[in-house]
Length: 216
Image 1 (cartoon, helix red, strand yellow):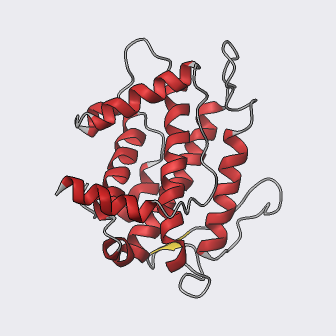
Image 2 (cartoon, one colour):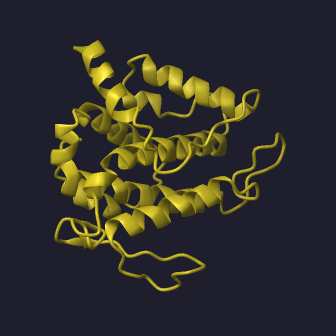
Image 3 (spheres, one colour):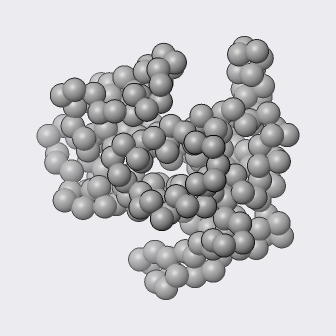
């Protein structure tokens, strides 16, 4: 069943509907090596709880940076394939069921938390993350350039908001995921993300509540 599933996913995710261009790691950099290491252990079929653990001798900030960028790419891709089902009409509010509503706030256009439709929220979110991960002052790529003091705080904010994409997709678009045959892929990505944020306590447990009833 595995090759069949892979083929099916290839068709699903080959539409290349990434919401945004993928962010790549530069070959020859420390982070590229770390990314390859992370991908290799992910493909090795190891338990995901083990996969997320910091490899001995590696820097925690590098490890977090690699995963933030990788999760941005993956979740970007998942939402890109869902986006035709997530419209102003179907999702006029960015929500996770009836109890949770997410408002958008940033330092430029929306200084106060603002109600947006789900597609608008996703658009703002992906632009905002892309701007941060391409900012050398926050995600330095040059060897020997230190991470800023607030690096983990910024990553917490990014990961918290990315978690909301899972919340929205699972609660409002799960039937589409199933119809596309992408359920196994999305579930694996979610579990990987979930174990990572738990391993390093990067997202407040209250943010996780909307999906708590889902089998982990």
